[in-house]
Length: 272
Image (cartoon, rainbow, N blue to C red):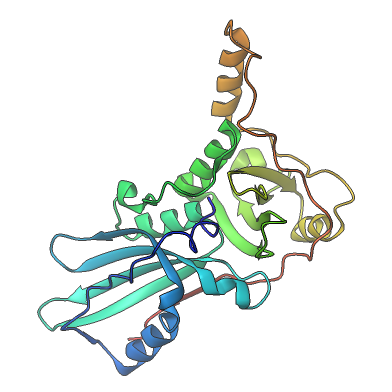
């Protein structure tokens, strides 16, 4: 999901860290928190949850400033704040991630209720098809911890003349993927920012995935569709209405050559 097209249209709220009256547990945590939130006036809150006991807060932001960072920088920030309500101190972990489903997975693994990690804005682009939604579900749930992020690259030209593209390279440890365990999840948002697609490419090595991303001299070598998508397509084929409606929009095309995967996932923990 992409939110960048709405951040200049809709007024955003300041991040709700809920640390008034609290101090960082250590000087290093204070320094790290200052560094991570230095440009938080450019953060667009997408989702948040605060535990009833006041000990935990989970926040998901879109970072409008990422477009001016190093090329390929991920545009989403997931943040988990922990508070010692007796000592009135706090600590935190954070992760900068390329796509929303990975941010949701990071938050839920740290205790955020899954439903609370769903972005509340309805103004952004929508999944163009069932396969996009299913692949996002896989990243969001990461069943059995099968996916490990290796690299990612966000290409956001910052112009309505072009769409955006996010490439996330993962290692898939599922036995069914052993023949080509390196999976490139390609998210492409249409230039009108109304919809986006996600496709999964299968590669035998990191080098092969990088070569494809740089050269683009062949279509993305598609991984087999998830089983649930096969079942849905079979049901549509059997339906008397099959063929009367296609995708919300055609899948975004694989575009002109772009730089290979360059950026490294950024994460951190306020040092104790």
